[in-house]
Image (cartoon, rainbow, N blue to C red):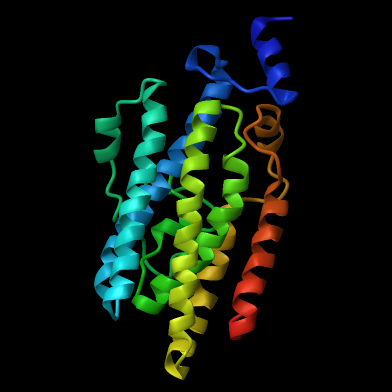
Length: 251
């Protein structure tokens, strides 16, 4: 058996890697894809919330949007630093795409990657107003929390450690969104806006979990880069959405 196959067998049994030097080529490729998707999504999310700061109806909301903008950019930088260990030119990477670019609001992208970068499809849609920003942040924040249960257990130890540092702050972003949503639905007008925003964003966030019965899942699971199927993660998210939106009449 080759050395590469021995490493893959080790990973399949729950082993972890600590250095790029130990990573087989296929593992390296999948790991870089995972990191690129996270970095691009965080940069695009940061750019989107930067634009939403001026939608904020008050100082408290402006501070929350500013915090999310700052911390998502910081999270992108932390993972990009791990990518640098694999030879990524981080300075060039940061400026190679327009992270604020968005598609038409009525575009139907599904889960397809588009636009030349690796951001999740949901970050190609523009935010239209404060209620829209709040609801999007709640739904995507809950989705990120579910995804973090996977990311904090990836088999590349330096990356898993970064994700464990990031996870509490991402959870706080969702909490800030829920706090904002509670204030929003205190009026009938706000509730109507929130209901319309939820109808718009819910299927788009659901699409970020990918296709059911993904052919790539077996490979990622064998490498220790995934532990739960797309279907299982989506189901967890849907339960959290029902738990969060149900009590305020938006589910």
